[in-house]
Image (cartoon, rainbow, N blue to C red; front, side):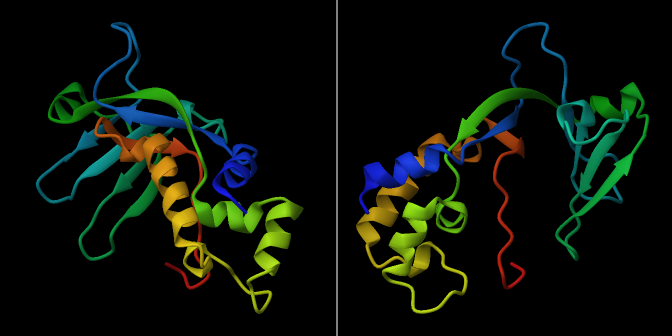
Length: 172
């Protein structure tokens, strides 16, 4: 396997994203969400208009609340916030984006060509990840290109909706 073939395999797995930024792309672009603190008792909160989440059909907001003891919690709410509450928060704007999938996703969901390549160095049928690939130059090359395209490696991205979200076998 070389980087050109690996990138061709990854292209098939690209998924759309909505990158949330603090700058609108046009003067009349609607606000897609907010980032900040609602009150002194809670931690930071990310509020997203669910119109940007196609899997939800009802008019609602997704609220992700960050708490030190639990890392985060997610709540769906039809919450109406006042202009005064939102005034202290940073407005976010959705920017369409795409990105290569993480290498682990290519290894796990790739075509038969990827699976044959993995079988050449995998001892069992268990989970295989980027750390299991002996060709570190290939892994590093892919990671460099992945990070260059990924919305969350950009300085202007606050959060993203969609794309790839891997669930690791050990729960991490």
